[in-house]
Length: 446
Image (tube, rainbow, N blue to C red; front, side, top):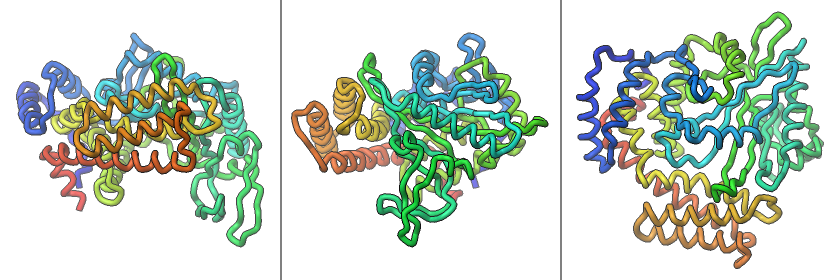
């Protein structure tokens, strides 16, 4: 079903692969840098697929899976380290952390237009009991949220901590038991939130309720970068483990994540990473590929999003030895039309940053709007371009005070996002379906 791991090829004909890639790329209407793709294929051919392949870049101090480091853009390192200062949890005497970039932010050499800054942090808590570890985590997250609640260049958006043990109703919306608990910034600061039980009885939920089952722990900010004239969403997903007094490592959510997509930013955290990596399942790569395969199925069948499908196909193919197909998908993200993916993602950022009451540098928000408009004009044609540009101009006017959209703000964001989403789908679907390996892979999902 397209999930098998293929061994690294011995005696690979790099020149032949490059020739086939260039020939297919011409059919796709995609430009290929022959030198770059040759270097990438040569490096990939030297890497054995598998879970043990992590290494340290001595020059920069970053580390991660060898395949992932091939796509990391060193020139962005200091920028991401500055943002990490805002989002990462600190080390304490009983807490060890290792912060990393994940997703498109870790693949800057190919995904030139990432929309978000996605961080992933391993947090290992040494405590006598699981309950104490959960309490330490709850204090860590709340202290971080309050310390970095709002500033001139950042603003907390949401915190996920805890799992609902029963159905609840919040703001008129029913939330099922088992769902992660999403806390608004004001609720985190207050240490409580008000919901209703299914029978209509009010219930004041305390912050420590999350300690029963921390589940999916994640913190989100919107950050302004005035020097770059932009705003960006920055998230930090936490993979929390409890280290027992006898040294056993127990994930608080029941699963220790593998490390196939992360670039770790601090060399001093290597000892923690190495300790945790020993506990990653030998079957981690196969499980990871199966998970990505399920997501490809979802994004090409149920919740159609060929941009997200392309990212997952790239990761599947590069980790399982299908380097020619991976190289072709890699080139798709370097095309001007891939800017649309960034526009789509950054509309959510503008939504968070441009609302009344935001403390963020509004000049950076306006610059971001100008950049989005230029991006749409540079890579789109036809009536779709006009509609998106007009919507972005309306949003810009609202931010500058020239026009008050009021309740229409959310609708303009949603409509613009839907239009750009359609353009992204059209671009990636057309290109992906011209790559034989992709077609074969998708047909095998039936």
